[in-house]
Length: 169
Image 1 (cartoon, rainbow, N blue to C red):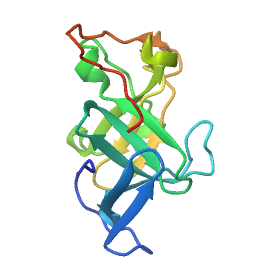
Image 2 (image 1 turned 180 degrees about the horizontal axis):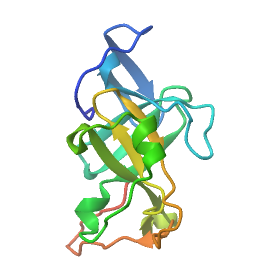
Image 3 (image 1 turned 30 degrees about the vertical axis):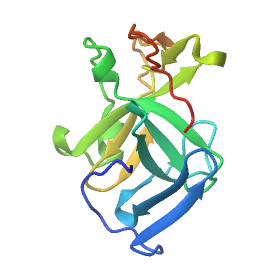
């Protein structure tokens, strides 16, 4: 399933595209599902086009799947769903660069780091990814001067056989 949000036209692709992703299999998405990251992402400066995927088997995670390199997918999650006290102060340059006029116009995701065998999971609360839902632009924004960590341990649900770690499709 593709994470659906507001629609803004993106050029040079057919209205609906089906791609076989190495990690997730076949997905169909529309050009309006694509987020443009003008500055790339740290570690991936040349990757600018991404789609946000949610998997039925992992509803608490959103995978940012690169369209520029199909082998790259980044697990993320909504930090507010896991950390009730998360209150980042978004720098003015980020608000301006993404043209965020209304809080309802953007979403916040944070990268999830999973250790081998999913024994430990942490979230990068220091550098949230902001998505403008109207313009379909995104940017990862370091919160300089904040006390947030790039590896904040994630709370884990306890339940018989319940896996909360992203499995990679």
